[in-house]
Image (cartoon, rainbow, N blue to C red; front, side, top):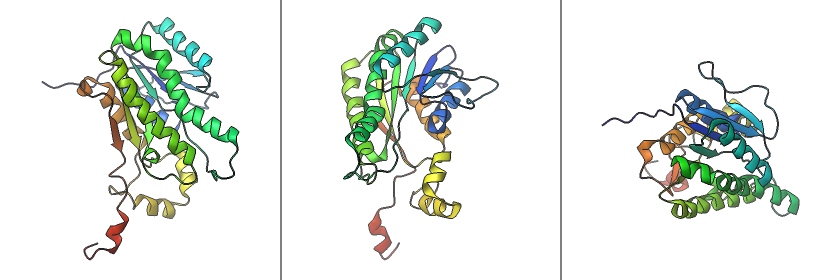
Length: 255
């Protein structure tokens, strides 16, 4: 029996959903018919638009548990339900670990790990009522060295550990999964990876040969939140184009 990915009548909350990967995720849920709520620390210049429909934006600092709780309460009060939460907000600038300040480490940890815990906890009762799900956005930095963003990588590793733990605690009422993102083409990535030639060189290190798009990450979120993934919980799905070419292949006779 075919199962369509249709979120009509469902409410989806995406943190950091106004730009970059978050905007791609929000757009894919809008296209699937969902009512989409997004949040961020500042009002965006524009919102994702799909077939004339936009998400509802709320100004929220997800590092603040009180603001998070108020946001989730406002969604459920206004719309009467909550079906999916995507914990997408995150990121980190380059920083030398030896010289970065304790305050910097605290902020990166709060944004990339504690925010996921706060939002998930605040959404639990509503998701339990709807038999909904959570998708946490992680990174390949959680499982391989992340020089220059060491605390970010450690925080994403914590997100993946949290995913497995609460998937067991909250089963069978709420499914909890994560996506391990590889390199994604966003306006920020263009600044980070340099010129078009430099970005092409970086893309060549990915077996698929290209960066992911935000919408491709969104498609993975749709699948994990849909009935197609009814028996999937506690999983970390790699969306990375095959990861990275193993370095030893450069030195083998057939490479």
